[in-house]
Amino acid sequence: MGNAVQKIGDVMRLNRRQLLEQVGLAGAALATGGFAASAESEPSGWRAGTAMEEITPPLDVGILMSAGRRLWAPFLGVRMPLYARALVIDNGHARVGLVALDLLGLAGEAVGGWEAFKQRLVVHAAERLSHDSIVLACSHTHSGPESLALTDLYKTKAFHEWVDVLCDHCSAALGRASRALVPVRLVGGTAPAQGWGVNRRIKTGRGIVYPGGVRPDDKVIGPEGPTDEQVRVLAMLDAAGKPAAIIVNATAHAICEMCIKQVSPDYPGEMSKLLEASHPGSRALFLQGAAGNISSSEVSTGAEGSRRQGRRLADAVEQALLQAQPIGGKSLRLQWAAVDLPARSPTGQPLPQPLKAPVGALRLGNAALVFLPGEPFLEIAMGIRQASPFGLTMVAGYCEDYIGYIPTDRAFRNGGYETGPGRWSRVGAGSERLMRQAAITLLQGINK
Image (cartoon, rainbow, N blue to C red; front, top):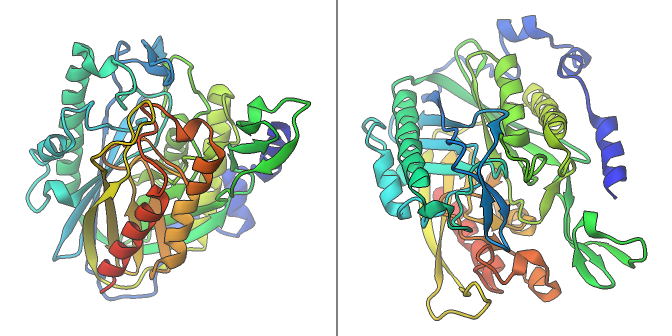
């Protein structure tokens, strides 16, 4: 399976400059009006500002080596730095801040309590931003620090000190973005990325295994579920038609460099670097999709795999931008819900008290973004998008407080790593429906 996916990826991989030339739009054309620049001459009312702060940890704030054995190890070096990319959006009536983090995730237990951590973010974030108008989303790079409280790393002094720095830098980025607002118009689009990811839960005669664990003598039934081969893009164009910010939503575990003891943002960081180089002055914010059961097609291929996957994604983003259409509407609304999910102990025993999961929905005109905690399975996002009243709906996982995997009921019946038991698998069967319905209810609410 891995070789087949690699061959598909090789066929699909294009040089980004070649892609622009193929559609007849070179850099000079971008400078004179930009891709999909709206023909509207009236001010849109939207303003956006961006900023970026480095959040690379010290080497002794180390990498997750094994969740099952609760092992972490210090980093040996830094291949690429990690960043917090902040975007602040304002429509004259409301203001929202989004921070895309090159991190594995953030658990409330690891950062001193989730509400307290969010409250600290508003210190430098300028007026009109409160803790509940800020969204934190992680790329799920496995080459960032172990910030999920799956090991005892979060109890160390070095980790505590890094969390303080992380909070200060996220807050500073939000403040600078708030002070850098410029008029923008919104455009959105999608593009295919065949071979981009694989459903990592393979059904065999002996149960669920990962693709790399399939034995020659196995009876292979096939992937348990679907993949998502669409990249969704929402860009904010300035007065010259150039992107001030590019939000990218794609779905695949960032594990090209897994367990290599070098700090790296993996493929999402490679993608952001490429897009920001092609569009000077812009910021590319990656929102990881519902990737709980979706792996990158470049699993454990190292830095070269990250670069290939990042370029493949950047190419798809460029294609989506070239075909993007204006996003109508003026509404800016962010709403939250706390969903009670059936909870389990690390040993798999049902707990009497539910696990409260934060779910958010953001309306940007006639587009919407949904923010899910933990590691939701792809089928949850698909159900949300299908029921969404918005034409362009992005669903991001790994947002806000980390609560572990959110598997489908089918996955609970079939078993496997993601269903636990373990500290990474804290919810029980039935969570799929509750999570999906909470998000759909929020989308319906912000559409009124």
